[in-house]
Every structure is written in C-alpha cells, then in structure tokens.
Length: 478
Ligand code: SAH
Ligand code: SF4
Ligand code: F3S
Image (cartoon, rainbow, N blue to C red; front, side, top):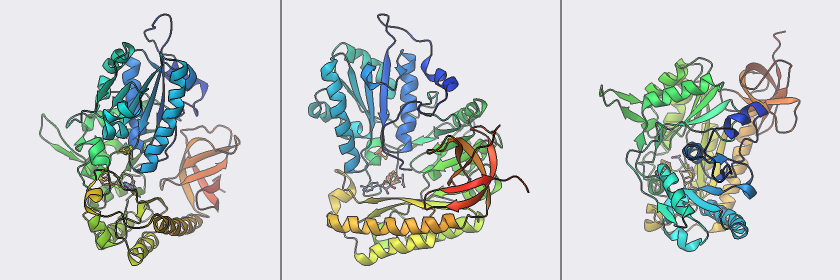
C-alpha cells in the first residue's frame, strides 16, 4: 500500500465548481483574517487519508486548507518512517518550512504521523522551530495543541490508542479528483514483521465500525464519487463486533456490504496479507462485478528462510498456493507486490528466489525497496544488517529490471482486449485525452469523446502498451 512520497498539492486536479467545496466554507475569522493551513503528506495512502481527517478537524476550528505555503498560518507535515530515506525527505522539507518561520515568527509548524510518533519529544529538541509533534492517534487534540502553540507553548501528543478509529469524523477530501477516494477501515498493525516500524508508529490493530464505513461509501457515491479504496495495513484481519448484537463482521462481509452500496461504485482495497487472505474474500470478489479484480499481495521475499527471519509467518509454498487460488477463483485478477532486497543474511541464491517469484506470480507491478534498517525493530535488535549497500542496490536493480519486463509482458497481453474503464480525468500529457483505470488497476489513456466526463464508465479497446500504461480507443461496437 506504499504509494508515492511527495507533497500533497491541495486540489490541483479540481475544477472550479469542486474547489468551492473545500475553500469557501463558513468559518470563524480571527482579527478579520481567515486562517489557513498548508499540509504535505508523505508515505502510504493511510497518511494521505489521515491528512483528510486532520483537515476536517481543523475546519471545525476555522482553519481552511490552502495551496500557498507562503501565506499559511499553519504548516503541517504528515510524516513517514518506513525507510531512512523517507525521514531524510521530511528533514529537508522542514528546512524549507523553518525558513518561512524565520521570516514570519507567527507561523506555526506541526509534525504529524509516523515520524512524530517514533521520535516523540526528541523532535522538539532536534528541530527547534517546530511547535507541535502529534502522533497518528492524537489528531483530535490538534485544536488544543494549536491554541497552546498560539500562546507560545509547544506541545507533544503521541498517545497511541487501542480504540481510536476517527469513525465519526467525515474526512475533508484534499487533492481530490472527485471520482476516487480512500476510506480508512482499520488502524495500526498487530503483525510483527521484523523489518517494519509500523507497529511502533501506529500501535495496535483496531477495526472501524462497519456501518460508518458503509455510510461513508454511500455519502461519497451520492456526491458523485465512483470508486473507494478500503485502507488498512492488513485488511484481511478486519474484524468488527457489533456492540449491540455481538455479531462479527469480517473483511469478506465488509467487502460485500460496501459492494452493495451501488453497482456503479467500484471497491478496491489495500493491503492484503498473504497469511490472512481467505478464499471467502476471493469468492466475494468473484461474485461482485464492482469489486475490482486486483490484489496487492506483498511477498517481501521469495525465499522461505528469509520470510521466516522477516517473521512474515508464511513460506514460499504458502504464498504460491495463495497466488494459485487467486488465479483459479478470479482468472482475470491482477496481482501486485512489495519486495525488499538485501534483507539481513540474504544470499545470492535466496535473492534468485525473489526473482523467480516475480515470474511465477506474474505481477502486474511491484513496489521494490533495498532493505533499510529501522531503529528499535526486531531485525535491528536481532540481526546484523550485513548485506553491503552496493549488493542491496544491485539486487534491487535486478528485481526492478525483471519486474519491468514482466509488467510489459502483462500489458502487451491486453492488446486487443476491451475493458470497462472509470474515467478519472485528463491524461498527464494532453487535454485531448482522458485517463482512467480498468478493474485490474491498470492506467489506460484514450482520446476524449464529447459528452464523456470524469466519473463515467466507458468501454475501451486496447491498442498499445508500455510497461507502465495502456493506450486504447473507445469501443464503438462496430
Ligand atoms: N502493511 C503492508 C506494508 C506497509 S509498509 C504489508 O504488510 O505489506 C510498505 C512496504 O514498505 C512494505 O511492504 C515493505 O516492502 C516496505 N518496507 C517496510 N519496512 C521496510 C524497511 N525497513 N526497509 C525497506 N523496505 C521496507
Ligand atoms: Fe509492517 Fe508487517 Fe504490519 Fe505490514 S503487516 S505494516 S509490513 S508489520
Ligand atoms: Fe505509512 Fe510510512 Fe507510517 S508507510 S504507516 S506513513 S511509516
């Protein structure tokens, strides 16, 4: 579920009519001045989704989102700790924000998210110009921390909760195309993958009220959205008990409940864990046309010994069995993955098994990383980070090269096929073209036709493919 690391540019894709939804809300004005906040998000989709909860909480106390860092009263950065590089990126951005603060001492700066949680009060010592350090479960406390910061009092709240799911908060959609949205269905993670910092930065796993999820999906559909992605670190372990009836909703049932909101609302989800994804989930996907035929199923390594050291709790055979089950139950399903190269003690032969897994699983794409030791994780405590940096990088290059070839082969096989595509907006390159995705999550670019708009479904016949994109034409039926 790791996505891009980059600034969240507010509303850059919105048309004028939608911008109004975000910018022109009634809000208290202070000293004749409408207060605003500027936010950048890094890391996974979960962080981007959290920023929308933060935006909603700040809206309640009169802060409106802005794209202009230079005029904002408050700058927030929602941070990621997953790899060392993610933290370095944030430090660099803080230098830019600090420069602003030196010019405008009234400006407030807040650090949110996983790095805030990992470093806690230490952050205030290291970064003298930061006013607030707020962990992922403490966003309701932002108004109070802000009020204190305005009085010159710095604040830290990194309390991790066993219950907080922000279920009652209606996220303020940032950077939205008006067609696709994230819905957070659970928080935290109870797996203890030895390389991973997430259990420490996000706390214990907890599932959100199923009815609040369904009503958020319904609300999005009513406002014109046509695709929702259900988010969690391990969606397959979603489990919510209705406090009144004591009935338990599992992930397969939640998928079905959201699919029933409307046949024109597409459902996606991320991330699945190979140890937990059940046949019941796969059969539910097969039963509903609007549950997309795409599964992000991170393997991390193709070798059983490394998987054990990683504490992934499955081995190569188990993973291969899950892949076979997916292709058996949902024949046109696309599978993608996350792969780490150069984990502690990984040998050349073991690395070869990651390569052969890419081939076996026929991934449509993967996110690929060189292992980065994270302080405090079980791997950092127990194993030596003994694969030289250049070997990690070389293995990473090999993994990327093979995955690019497999993705190209995967995409080439689509030439001549026709897919139902949900239009998301203009293509990056041209206003004369639309972009959208098929059920398998592949981006498809095609020439526009009058009358079609983002949010519409259209049948596209594929004519060209690269390793990253498909191109096609609207199917006219003749
Ligand atoms: N919950 C998801 C992963 C979230 S983190 C899952 O279980 O798959 C996203 C990805 O970052 C992971 O899948 C992993 O491939 C990568 N990652 C996590 N920790 C890492 C580390 N220490 N070094 C390199 N990559 C890491
Ligand atoms: Fe990290 Fe593993 Fe949890 Fe994913 S499942 S967030 S990799 S501990
Ligand atoms: Fe996500 Fe990074 Fe935190 S990947 S959960 S933002 S450490």
